[in-house]
Image (tube, rainbow, N blue to C red; front, side):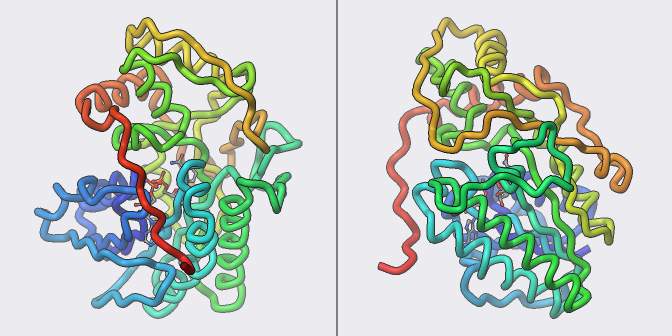
Length: 325
Ligand code: NAD
């Protein structure tokens, strides 16, 4: 297949590009590096089937040649990034999604939207299946991300219904693994960085809030299954194994052998209390379920961070990419 991956240089995108190349697909990655480094895909540039096109998908762009599938991953995705890039986040979900959908329409290609468990907001229903409509604060600090993804889902379904586009949606739950950024503010990368540097692990509230953590290889298998089907979803993709954030911190301390302590900070606004996906639909319709246990995935991730000591130090501030000045 000839696959276009927006956000292909990011954490999930670079693993997806690799997996697609491995099975013989050709891949064009579109990325403006707003929240990633081109180093993630630098080794892929040697592959004949791979091309990286630097571009912002929220403004019109050109992709030459044939296209069989379009995967829209481009968006600031970590709380730090969407707080730093609020207008860019809304644009990635709206104009960015529409530009990628139009590309799919022009080529009669399969379209896959990477949505998020954040569409459920701070859920009133637990665990969350795809029929739950969510509990999102539309004006809170997280709303730029949550509402952008909800709009992107609506747009995707509107193209499917009105244009007959072969479009589908996956709702991704917390995913972790090698190539996360050490300073992206996500809980797994933060704990591992702090543990490896001998700093106290920072927990919000009392650490009793729960999350479900999926290893990146499992997530990429789910994304590939979504490319290969014509089904619309939405499908929850995530690991139903639910842990408290405190349990995660203790596991990271155990795996790293770190002597770091725990430090408790006030809960951020609208931080979801519980998160766990129901994945029955993905099991039945995509034949997908996660296979990598948390302990094993965390060991791979810790090993990767330990091999990148330079990335653990404080990063230089990244400038915003500049919506209206
Ligand atoms: P990431 O920040 O590593 O990757 C996002 C990529 O999109 C980056 O390479 C960034 O530079 C690029 N990008 C952002 N805006 C762009 C634009 N306007 N034009 C071109 N490129 C742009 O994040 P990730 O974790 O790899 O997330 C990928 C996708 O999966 C995102 O859409 C995110 O919302 C979704 N997702 C991820 C998770 C997770 O746990 N990793 C959970 C839920 C949803």
